Image (cartoon, rainbow over all chains, first blue to last red; front, side, top):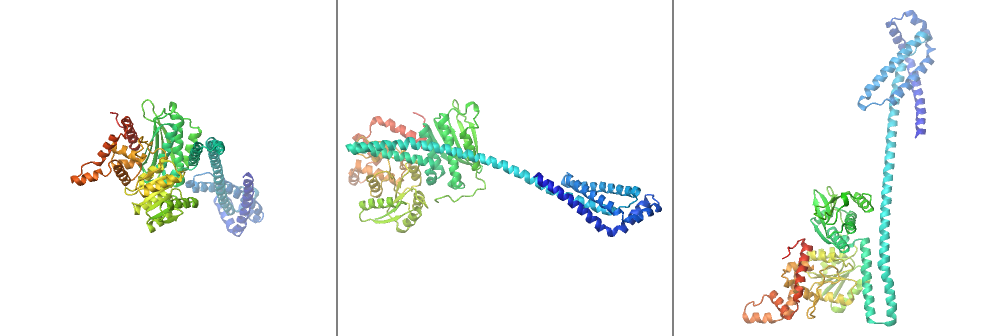
Length: 385
Length: 249
């Protein structure tokens, strides 16, 4: 970026020189008129006509000095226009003030040149140089601001991008953990059953007893159920076939069977309201509830868990309330994998999650509230309908 | 007799058709490979009985059944599913119309069960819910072999005093299914006595429900020691289904 800036400075320097030159050359035609204005000014300020006549012949020799001065004035004007930092509504006045100041400087220079070097410079040329310089500076400043803005946007984007990448990485990490637990499930349940089956079949091939056959049959059925369960944790079929309400109920019951608590579900939501969420959003919501229930199984030691689904102020609210031991010390480890997982998933569907202590006496319990704003959403055509 | 088989896996579809052919040799058979196709055929040919897979492309079996029942609520449908979760049976129990007879059978079951289910739904008008589907009320086993498990379950429901609607909700079947179960039980326990008596007396003599319970008591079909358990099962069901906690008496 600095290279570009240096280059721009050089370019603007050159442009200022050209602008001054153009101003001077274009004003040459007005030199007689200008000189007259100048002489009148000088006479008015008390100079004698003789003193004026003494330098009137040196018109040609004043050209170089005029060039040099107008160039510097243009450059100074440009710098002033560029560096001037004022609010937009005051910009005109500020520029006017700068212009008047510079005009004053130019008049002093003019007068000094006439007085001590006996050359008369051209004030109108200076005027135009200053104006051009100011305009140019203003334009450069505008470029500069644009540039800074783009730079800051660029950095903001970069920061945001990094954040996103981190979140993605974390999510992939979580998926990895899930995949590992899935592989462990397959290993523990299905594979070991398969091994047992093979042994049983080998024995049956030798003895051919009916009870062995029945055993094999039983084991096969159990393995099928296990495979189905693993599949179900991969992709909850109930969500696809029965809809969110029934799937959440099923999820709660499943958690209840696993965690040894009673699951009670209530849904006061019309199917039309649930259809405002796409299938992907529904399955993310399902995962959120599932994770909350997993937490109940792991930590709460609850006897009853209530999963309520309702509409409150145009938002879909799912509350998972248990009667377990509650949040220890009223504080939660915000950095835990499960909570981060929940927050990120909630973020994806624009949901908010709140954890709070329940109102139970003795065992306070925990209430998890997931809130998805439905306002402005219209029904999404769900798959399979 | 017209039978429609809706199933997306060709091998399974062929298998189901074979079983149906064996049971009903003269049946007119139609087949569809997804829910949408099944729905169209069901409206066009008005089959007496439908075997419906649950998970299919285009339209799931449940959605298709829902639509079929919307236009013809008396249609008999046997769901042939690979999902053992109770949620399926519950949801089907919610959408089945009062007039319909339906069944739910897991695909992992053998041919004998498939035949039994078809027979039950089709011929006996008796809803068939696969006993393996977990959670559907811990199955009550009748010690006396004169009653089947389903009949015993119905007997218990009558004895505990549930209405048809309540039984339908508890067992996830239609009201007509409940009534059919009741009359089957009545046939078995009271037989034709009721009808003959009514003819002679010229009026209704027995209240059939009470008579059934009495008959069960007389024959010792209900173990008095288990009555307390039946009541606590009922309490558990109230809590689970309606979130209603009973005050212990």
